[in-house]
Image 1 (spheres, rainbow, N blue to C red):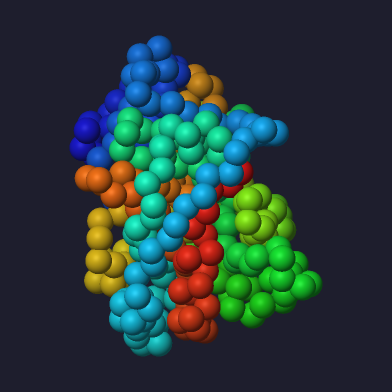
Image 2 (cartoon, rainbow, N blue to C red):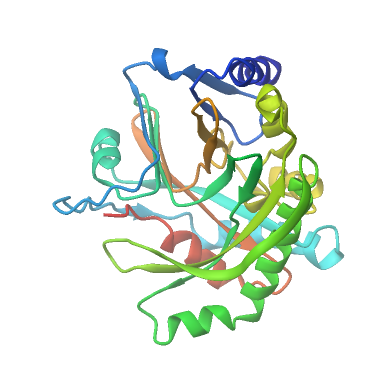
Length: 315
């Protein structure tokens, strides 16, 4: 379903208050909209954190790209940053991993947002895209990650100048995005720490909350509203348009639905996520797609390590 079709379908669902699931790719070029009463059997989702007390860890072997290949892409991005073309770019890679059962990952992973799309991909995302309720739209950018196993991890994260700078940039970017569809946009919480659970050691990640006010008839324009906000600022960069160009130059694969969005409209409210923490089945191989925010202050080895550190199944 191309851009015009998924937008129109979502507008129609919103106008008639039809509960639906929507899934839209990174570029906003392709999307699927399923009325919940007609959801196919091979698509499953859970948008409520489930506490898995007896889940068995799913081991995965990682086969990262060679560091020189990463540095080549990093250098392309960094040159644009140093030239002032952009301030922040989210650079991602598809890392081959050992074979896994996508259904097993879906049923056992612990995450706020989980989605199984046929035998093609599974996502277990901690990141909200937007929530809409009572004519308020809210977004929660997540930028800045550290292993919780590091000594004084929280203080180290909160006082890291590169992470502070990156977070300021993404909050400003997403505030600007919300102003395209909402009024009275403001940040209500800035750089609070979330704990992301993983079997090999937790991660700490900083988030913020940004809120804006929507018109009373926003449901009838739901597709147009979401299209205006895409791609998600947290996985593109700032300024967004130029960062998307830099991403296309530096990345050597198509993101597809990875870093797109998925969400549920229940007839009155919207809950949606960014499609990160993502495993895709392509041919007879499996790929875990992950990324890191690059700024002019970034060190390539640290960003390479972060991309690999994010390859995990939260059980």
